[in-house]
Length: 296
Image (cartoon, rainbow, N blue to C red; front, side, top):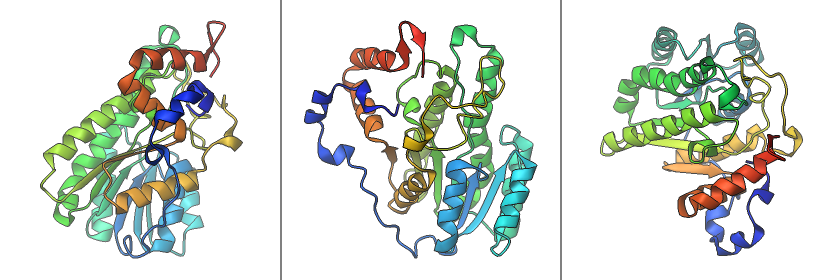
């Protein structure tokens, strides 16, 4: 939800400024030095922006992506640094196991795992084949479980971090994104459980919830038949950049935050959905529908 008009302006008067502030904070240059950071879905968008931000900070990076050509291009682009890049479909547990094990073999362990790989969708549930929900859940939810399962022993040993890139859709179900919302609700519920299980272990567990970020995710979003739409319904030029999003996420990892919501409207939406859920239903409907038709 990227349009602040979805929420009545007078509501902002009652929200503490600290809650909605999105002022960027500097990253501690030494925190990521020599840390082994694993980023799934690193060939595009937020994942690639995280890599670009971490390289100057001295991190050792491992990443994966489904597209062999994009992974090869990434390796060529960063040939001067030690980047462990592997073609891997995170919906396949065996491929996730091989990716994580090869990372540990290459670098000796894992300090930070950022479960970033994801796919979106845009279609009404009534019109969609059930395969859409299955694909989205396998990538967005099970992919994070598979990678974390094999990385966690090393992260426990190093008292590192497990991070999930979620969404405001993990707090508020969005029309036309039922499978996407379901996957993010599942991701956040699982991470909250994991955080509680590991509360006294020294391991940090966090989920980050960007708003709409300029990236390829909407072009790759699935339609009602489970095929890539190949288009975006948003003005990508007006969205938060992937680079800015990456800086917020890295700062939150450094500070061991529990969770962060990275858009003004997202923060308001989460708050409204918690306090006034019926009002949030109506506002969300009015934002996404026009004359009874889904337009966003």
